[in-house]
Length: 181
Ligand code: ADP
Image 1 (cartoon, protein in one colour):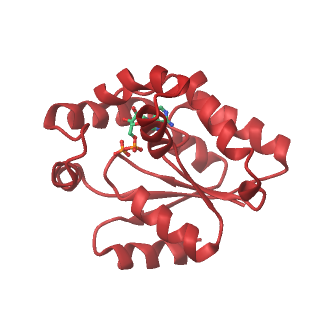
Image 2: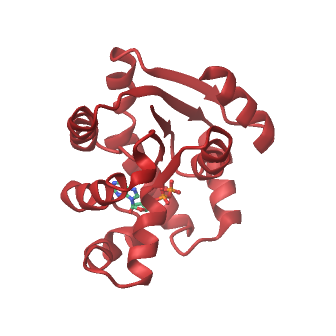
Image 3: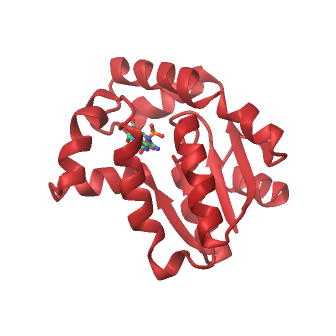
């Protein structure tokens, strides 16, 4: 079964995905981590992605598809996975549906982690990753609102969407996610 962790940059998708993958004993795919690793190793995909990641822009869908297909062809994905940071566009969501159908997998739930924008900016500034400067954060939030947030309606219509409050401790939020699943 596939679980999608959804939400704006900085809501805690990565932290929660890591914990859930361990608890449920399934694979974890973070497209952000996959890009950062590819960039570090300067692979062809890394070279294509670097400028977009540095600027806080979305990596083009065809490049995202490459990294997702590669990751999902691993044996560890046969039982399903936690997806963190993917899909982020309607094109990616459509591509995911096609890919899952081919693999005989289905989406269990899309968990929308809800945190208000002021708290998000504060968390990201504290995290201090290279793309966590005030300007790039504001841009990533605007990209999220424009390109990614509309997917909430798409998954609501597919009857997959659950929303959990992302404020509180890591363990509190994790408990809420587990209850929602
Ligand atoms: P955050 O959730 O804080 O934005 P991520 O690690 O998920 O951090 O993503 C970092 C960057 O990687 C994004 O700003 C974007 O450039 C790129 N990226 C990650 N996932 C995707 C995706 N599904 N589609 C396009 N770009 C992506």
